[in-house]
Image (cartoon, rainbow, N blue to C red; front, top):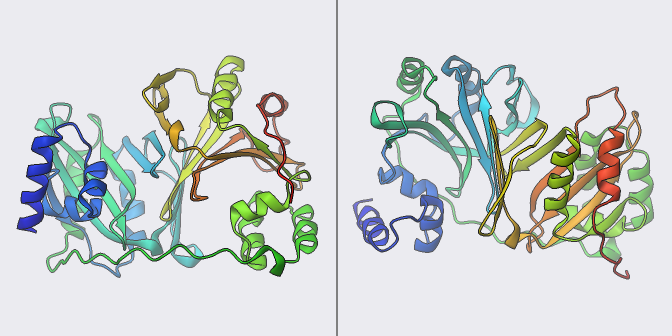
Length: 353
């Protein structure tokens, strides 16, 4: 750990403005390993690998207003609010936070490490910016909770005291090679599309992929011309611009293997900065690296409330970056203003199968 701290110090001297996530990648280590050394501020390990991380989720409500952050390599989703409406009695190690505005789907069975971090910052209270940071088995960040100036610091310190781990070792696992797709010829495409046509809820889509052994981007190819259309990569920007111009409330989903974070509502202030296209609204920030967008798809899923239309955005490895929907709730039809936005998005020509 001392050696890693020294390596980071040398790296930071040459790259003073590089964020810790980027520094970790360029140094060939995980972000979690760097955080554990304390280079980003004093880091108190929480619980222990193998612990039930869901126990912490309901306790976050006591912190009051915080900033929830979930990201992947190409998109950062930041939402201000309280962790209200926690649900932790879900199968497969899941937990939900279903309050307004914090809306999360947490795959806690994939969380391995957690830290309470106190980072020196003029913007933080008492010169410290306090956060809870959670990582998977590979040391990749899955979810973070940052205190704001109105958060309850005493509640934060009490939570840390309850969950601090005394016997801790940061031992990350090597990332496995990506699983190969099932060859197209081995999949009953017509049966898959028939099952797709019979969907009753958007939440049934993932089980559909699992049952047929189909990857997400493979499914989009199979359904091209029936339930999906290729869009230009610029479609993500165009969708946000149109939603802002027409004041259409939308839903923005950003996730990784450990968490999905959702914004529901309008978007207003859109700003381009370098490779990033940003939403900079009070209570909601989105940062989208457009250079990493390889594919965009318009996707239609039948439900008992009518068709639901999404814009789904992927990187070159087929990993989903972000999803956009029109604001909707069960029992209500999709917004016609969102459908109009989607109809106006730039399309690509279909690729012959």
